[in-house]
Structure formats: C-alpha cells, structure tokens
Length: 289
Image (cartoon, rainbow, N blue to C red; front, side, top):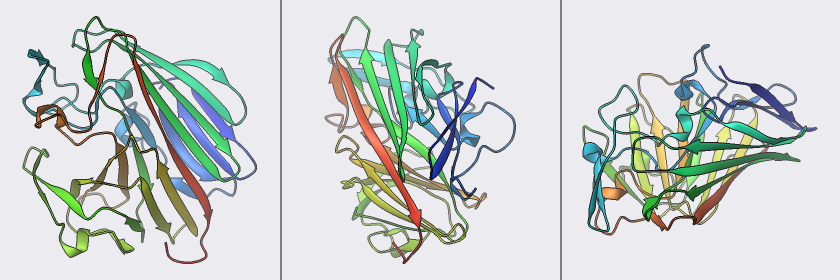
C-alpha cells in the first residue's frame, strides 16, 4: 500500500491512500460507513472506497480510437481485454498539501500510450459534506480528447437509490454500450428503489447530476451532487457480490471515443485543463430519499 492519511471533522472521517489516489473508507465519526471500506490488504483500487477516473472513463472498444484523423492504440491495463478507467487509479500520487480536513495530491503520467498529462485531486470535508475535485492538464504535444470521473463504492445492504435519467445504454457482452433504450422498470431509478437481483453494469445518459442514496442499515442518507461536466452516470451492482454498488459520475459514456462525435469527450490542446467536482452530503435518515 501507499502512504495512508485520514481526514476528519466533527461529523465525517475519510481515509486516503496515495497509491492510486484512492479513498480507503468514508464514515461518520460514530463509525457508520457511507462508503464501502477497503476490503483485503492489496493495492487493487477495485477494493477501495473510491478512485479517480482519468484521463478516460470506463472501457475503450478494441483498445483503439481515432481523433483528428490520427489513429491511436491503448494497451489493456488490467486483467481484462480492454483498456479500463484510465491510468490515475493505478499510479502513485504525490501529496501536495494536507491539513486535518483537506488534502491535495497530484499524478504525472508520461507512459507509452498517447496520453501525457498531470492530474490533480483535492479532497475536503466541510460540515456534513465530502467534496472531491479532479483536474487534468494535457501535457502532450498534440490535442487529444479527455474525460474525467469518479468511481465510489457504497454499502449495498437494503440500499435504495434515486436519480433523474430516463434512458440507459444496453450493454453487450464486452460491457460496451450498444443501444440507447428505456430501462426496464426494475432499473428505472426516477423513483426510489432497490437494486435488481441481476447484474447492473450500465450507463445512464442525460443525467442531471443529482442522486439520492438511502442506506437504512446505517441510518444514513447520502446526496450526490456532480458538476454539469458529468452528464453520464454509470451504475454497477454485481449479482455475484451484493455487498456493494457503484454510482459513477462520468463526463462521457463508455467507449465514447469510438462513438460518432465522441459525445462528452473534451478536446484539450497542449496546456489546456479540464476539471470537475463531486460532492456527497451525508446526514441521518429521516425519510426515504
């Protein structure tokens, strides 16, 4: 593991690991988790509480894309056939500032793939809120399309969620979106509902940036608010592990680099930056979300 830090105020506590720039836990000062705590002792960010998505979100079909007439190739970066979630979650971040309730860190990527960039995260607690801000600056020699996102894990037992998005993308066997459709009733979260018994691994388009999470086993409500940059919400709830689910604010859909017009992707010229914030507000349950 990397260097471990703890931020806290009178209501909340979160843990940070500089390996991957991840959160390792998120809980109230009374010990009630609002994020899933890190499971196991390894460095795999997929067992953390939250990790950053930079310079891309989710998967890239065929590990290839074309931008401005130039073809680019990406290498698979995990034990999967497709390039996944960018590089920031696998790199070593450097602490640039740290107080009792806030910390900043940076990650420099200069690998063999086409992306050269600097990413920065700022994590802060303020009263009943946890805010995460992620920025990326193109440090390469050419203009490329960039994206950002967050991958938080929430405890699932009895959870209900609500968010405003009427359409989802049906996914194929490679988890890439194949068609924009109306979701089935059990996956329509415009009204509060629990997660389905089958695996949910789909992107919801046209998200308004707001989600409500009811955690009855913890006696907590979590309100998610994401900047307008994050127009897609990825929902991941595996049937084989019902201990968690993920609501992932993303600036673009999975495989957007290979969709017409690259929807949600942001072209950055050398030296240009992109940034956005996700805020979680945590309070005691009084009613359903």
